[in-house]
Length: 411
Image (cartoon, rainbow, N blue to C red; front, side):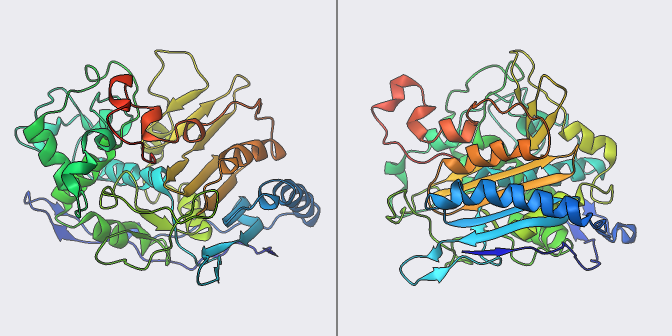
């Protein structure tokens, strides 16, 4: 195992693109959007050493001692205080994990889709109050707004459950396939729009389609030109079955390869590959107002589901922990097959915690969460995260459906 300590520095990067959408909307090029990343203030040596000792002791006696394969990065005020890569990107070829190994971050990628939609709203290209019929004529679920998709209050059924594997033999489901299935088969929605929170990957598949419809670009190209390249995220991309055939595989806890299935082709809800260092650049971008205005960013970090008292909540593309002592954690975990991702922002202390793995290990979530208390009083009491408990399709599927459809990994 090799531990790296390095200060976080990034070059000045240009920002902006112009394109004409299929709706005749022009996305403006704004030269004022050159991205100047915040320059980290060098930590006091004693402070740095204190946190390095605490963080390294925590992970090296915990997660890293239990077969972890992937990357860990912890930063404070933009300074990387702990970085570690362990295990194999490809066990058969003995390719070791490195700081440039791009890993599937599953639902953690919803933070990118959500921010892209908010930016389009800020630029006046869409409104969060827009009904989906604006983008998808004949959409058979009235009353669903863009904002409801963002905060999972749409009531739309989860495509992971209603796209049966038997109907997609030797073919990958795409975002358009999901929409077409909803238009023609009209699977029952879960509840009236806005009534309550229910996490559904369908919401973010549709948001990615909205981005494509408004921008005139494919979602992978839009994210590359609008975010990944301007932010210097050189190892980050949206996965395409045809264009990225050589991505790393994921593994079951016993080391067996986790085979792909018919749902590898959808994006917006998943399918972003990145590295801990690139994800730190994404995190640091939100300490400026150059990507999105402060009021709109604050709205993304506001809880929208308060009908049931809980420390857990959801903003616009972000999960939230609203603790009784006033602390707030802005985060988004994810899982797809054997890929596990934990991405947390402790904004009071300006701490970033990133753990990405490609061999199934539920400790990724619990250990990432427990590490919060190294930096502040985050009241960690052993409660399990959503991605820790909702591991399989059957665990969240209505009981009437569980016997008829084999369980698959969730996102």
